[in-house]
Image (cartoon, rainbow, N blue to C red; front, side):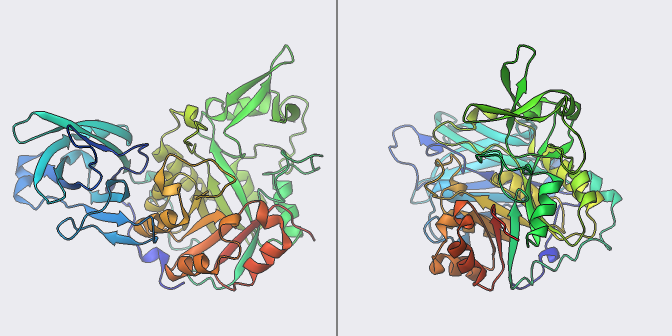
Length: 465
């Protein structure tokens, strides 16, 4: 890889708005009497709300088309050609998203005006979501609707208190030319294994064991409690043992960190409950389940590289993880995790990763020094298809990573094992590659990846000394 990841711009004071249709279940544009509006065009324009500012050129969006067939990311010019709406992305950097209104002008395949709608800044006050907008023709008659996804990324104000001069050997990743072996959740997944191993996954003891067994780094999962304490655990929910001896499933976002220490928490797998935390459980920092992120950063040598996976629900077309919403706001998650990493991880090489495309974008936009990998299940047969199209294929992931200037993508190993053409496409796009999944427990698959002699992070469950 070439260039410097840290030469890029990031949100010091400005806001960034992104409009897109990528999480739409169906075509986002519906026009009365038109059976298929997928090839219609949309242009986004800004209008300053302060009349004194209107003499200045209004800020303009950067528009991109993400090609699902080739993985290409191209600037979008509607005067030259047309791209399916589901592939379009608009990005705008401005001092304050509240200073403008945003107009969406719809044209037919011949670029003739069809209709228009507008978004006022108050409609974006949640900083993320989907808007259903009425589309009107030139006579202001309603002619259809637009279903529009958006995020507004705000600066991470906590970074103002940290010096950037003495932090991270940040050029490590852009010059990476060798494969790296990481322990997945430390020394491997444990709660879904029969019999259950002695060292639990995502604990400091498991991270130490992975390094002892030859890994140069560890991957682990970070969640936030109700009181915004970042801690290490994989699943979005847990089972609490109540007084009657029964178990109640509870989402972790609804529990404080004290709750995790005081309740009897069990892990359920195949209708078997294993007590993992709470009353009667030794809480040595090395072996306890739910260690805080700051404890992990403080406990392991700075030579150990981290892949910090930031957890967020990933809705599937079959309904999986769709009931997790409303969820903690992405700006809050990103700010909390980033500020903790900057406060306690000053000399460590790290990457952040996430399956949620929009949270990935925020993790990248809000800070300059920790690279971001876009995690994707792509079309792996091991997982149900996602609602968000940016997770549908490896090509979608490549295009999205390029549009957002991520350092790379991380895919299930069954999608790239033996696929030299796909690996070449990733490297040709100047992207780092990460892999994970059951195939990374097979010696032949791992050996093939380690022979690539390129920037690749191979995350394994089975690490042998």
